[in-house]
Image 1: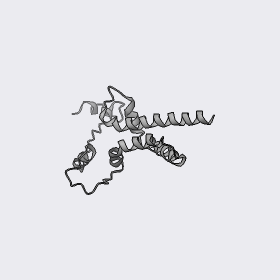
Image 2 (image 1 turned 180 degrees about the vertical axis):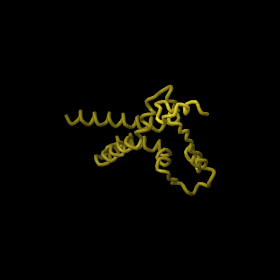
Image 3 (image 1 turned 30 degrees about the horizontal axis):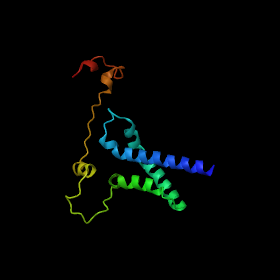
Image 4 (image 1 turned 90 degrees about the vertical axis):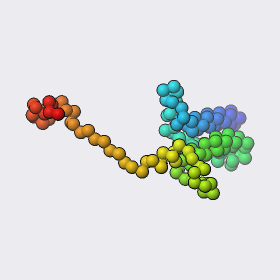
Length: 136
């Protein structure tokens, strides 16, 4: 029974490690072609937390299976630092370290708001004026 439970936990660990890797790839995969990683990208923090729990469990049991979750987490280290908006390697000169998220942040210092509030062109006759719908 103990062996079956350990195998089941190992398979769950592999599945969640694959989910974590697919969540790293979700910004680069088109949802039109393959939709599943897009949902995993939304669940990234939870999948990461599950993999951290697997990693801690394998460390406490002193098993080599800890490499599964450790490898999955380390493969997505860039996504992790972008998600938390940290830059751990401060010794790299500015301009040498670029990625999609940091490039986008450089241009996102503005807020653009567009509102076209026409109240459905008085579709339900809220104004009580029949000429409202035909006004330019």
